Length: 260
Image (cartoon, rainbow, N blue to C red; front, side, top):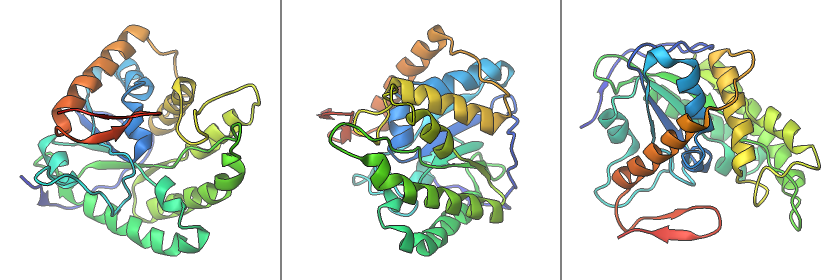
């Protein structure tokens, strides 16, 4: 099924959840790998227990705002958001797009605007448009053999600024996680990624706390309850097997796997 068109709703931060809200995490590898760590989702449950939120990860590695290839007969993002009856959407984009360089930012802003205007005007839950929060890329860090921060952070900062401008113009929420992760990565004793770009457990801890604080107005995110996080990660694993088709390759941080 596909959602019917509806009047968009403006999304302002801090976000306030309603009981039974269904939250979808979409976008690129940032959220795709996040399901394996579960910090952000666990913190939502810890700080909003009365919402009893239903959270599903629909992100797909390498997705861009208007380039989201899928296997035949799998269905596109709109169809899966409709199937999940999404009330709230967190959308992480901008990293892959940034490799086109700062000269491509005007075109990126047009692409992003089109994506936001479409997404916020679909009644995925059958009644109203979703509350939509746009999430910036995280920073890159220099690692042995690759000066990823030096190579990529200037353009990532520029794309983050462009995303904020478009989000403001389109009345959707925006969270800058680039600045906080860049600061955390500036500590030479910190190792937040395994390749300069894709984060390890500690990196996702920083990401999850930052996103919770900025999206929900928490002054200081609590420490993650590890029992909740273990349950979240297990749930995400089971949903992954249900959501992804057989014979689909996916990146797991060092090796490719295939099921089926």
